[in-house]
Length: 507
Image (cartoon, rainbow, N blue to C red):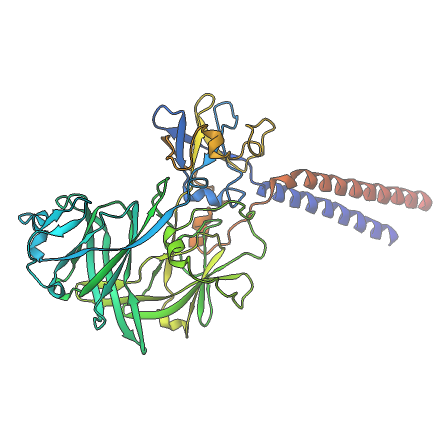
């Protein structure tokens, strides 16, 4: 009986050793190995500008991308710096601009709208002849933005106080009143009475377009809003803003009685939000908040991430939001979402500007039952501005972008080994008020294997996003495993010695 007990203990020890080894190999397999993708170059350099795909956030070990490296053919890290981090701060301005009522015929090619105006010495417009219609009957409007500097962020419209309804329109831009180009798609001005409250949407995103003049054309000329004024917010930035990029449609991961939570692509700094309601003629007040992980899957940012300039503009005078009742929940904004039928189409909620921080989930909370959002919860899409870096083509090509990189022993002076440098160090003589002179570079990230699902795909498919263990844990894990194996070996040797003594005594 005693021998059977010792044999059982020995077997248990062997099983424990096998289990520890299996656990170790599983953990080792989860360690993120340094990986890289080739960089394509255009031009002769020596400096190149590289806009990073949004998928890099799901691959990097650090939320602020500090573990990125640019390497040459020899595998050595080359110097690089982040753009826009050290450029002169953006300068915002808001200004009332002149508007002019135009007849519908001004949109025809046979009727040159420039004939109705003359240019003043300062470049602004003045009427050259009496308008054909009263402002209240205008089928389109000309907006004079010639006195504004930089990109046009948003237009804020004023209309008669008694005007109610949905007023659909399209915007065009021009620098000479002859050649016009579209600005975005169809937009709406909204003023509705609902539940004893007035619901308004009188601000329209202009996408940082650069233009001297804008032309507003009502989709239904017989149903145009009686405009009384327009103010335009603009921004001057040294480095241009990269175009916004969007995720696919994200469905809710879980829903409660009055809210739904949407899993977000891992580490993505969310700057814009689009809410797509499933049912027509739906309108509801919602609160939007971000959820933080109790244990972050990526290290916290220590540097600024790109911010949506519209969010900064709209919330710069807003007091900090009160903490939410739920731990780790950050209130972002309250708004009205809608999808309403109208003549010639539908009116949908505009794109919403968010703060550009990284959250594990976005929460949509209704002021009442969740059914206010329709028979099925809405889907959402999130947008972000790609981060851009500039690097020096030092050493031989080809070059590659690496992540989860271990710092090099030999590094360029000015920062951690292989990490980003100050822009003035990378480009001697560069000033914060000067645009960076660099050729273009591009990178395509590899498709992840099936066993390691990409973070954005995981969020869209409602799958848990895998965490990125810290590579620095590798050596102490090896040490712990070795110590455990030594202890098991000692226990096995003791058990075998005891069994031999028992057998000798039995003989």
